[in-house]
Image 1 (cartoon, rainbow, N blue to C red):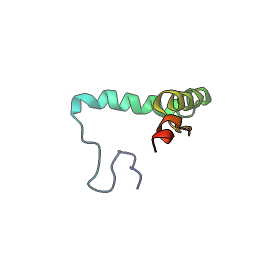
Image 2 (spheres, rainbow, N blue to C red):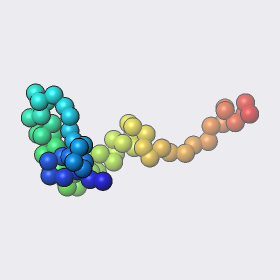
Image 3 (cartoon, one colour):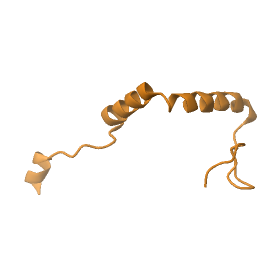
Image 4 (cartoon, one colour):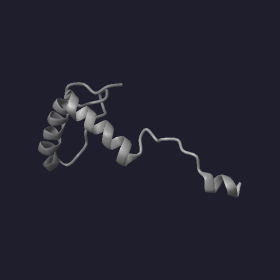
Length: 69
């Protein structure tokens, strides 16, 4: 299920955050909507996810662990 234009998931679900955070949250939402269409952003995001977050995780041979088994 996707949220409607007001950010609600059905008649009862929604964004329940302190009102003081709403302006920052809305600004973040707007900027991300722009950024996710930007090819350079997507390239940088993929790089950082792979290099720093470890996704997609590369497979490697764990030689020392294999010797212990």
